[in-house]
Length: 118
Image (tube, rainbow, N blue to C red):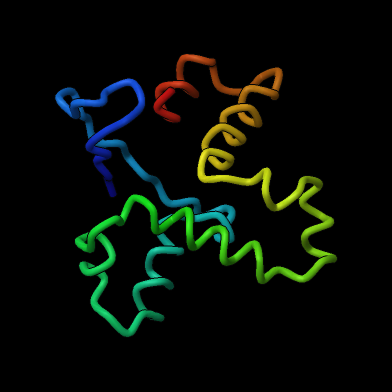
């Protein structure tokens, strides 16, 4: 599965966009993007295409994340170790990069930055 992000911080005009690959994670289904999309698809009442074709779809992830965090019970929020106001849409990408680079025998920085789009 691939996605294309039309504009980024480093490419404001959107001229040099390249599709990014998204892979399934069969070892950890809780964080598998392919499984998440399938569950989301089967739980929605509207067609999935409307998710990607509506106006302001770039803001939808941020508002959904904020709503989800606001609904979490306090014990789960305490497990996060940071305040809800400190978690944003960049947290997952940047946190995953930092986590991947923390392993002594992990992937090379170039491989991580290429995958993370940094």
